[in-house]
Image 1 (tube, rainbow, N blue to C red):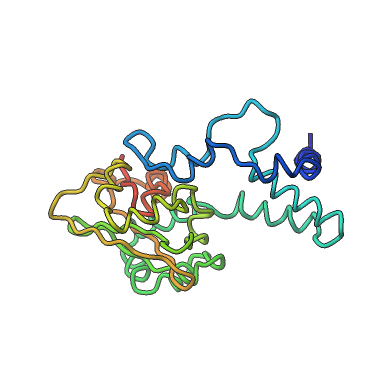
Image 2: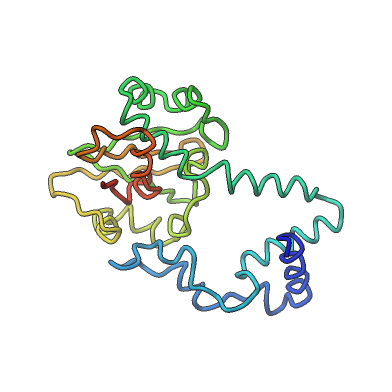
Length: 245
């Protein structure tokens, strides 16, 4: 069934039963918003939630579709415009863009220098513009310094290179704990740093979004940029992961 028809029908059902379906939030979802990470979850196991045996999407998706359906029915939004925006986020944004930027910085010393000095200008030179790219500041991981990014107030995030933020990045647990105990949080993501390494926590805001330039893994000297990009994860560009061969 066509996406809009199915979700629109589901949303209409939600509107009709708003008192129980739209407002209600399951205990599992509540826990996933606030549960502290552990060695197995690393925060991000909660991002997608457990598979549902229902044909209906999760509550947040239904609420969004309910609002979209009402706005379309009242003629306040154009369905084609909504689909264009969805297509933009599904196909033209995401961590693959950031991974390509990191790979180019690893392979091209001149581009790396430009990225570190003026990230928006360097990004624009390779066609990465808009969606907050003009606000990005690049910070580099080294043997002596490890960077990690957070937004303590809300969920400011470099959409232009990483797409939409993961659920754990927006969680109160991550936003509060990574400032107080960054090493412990990093260890729960599987990142264990030597004692002598300095950890720098960068607090994003509406004017500044940070992109971590992770260290290039050893043994990748002969790899192409495409091969290098495949090693770069979203988490490594936030600072909660480390690229590995």
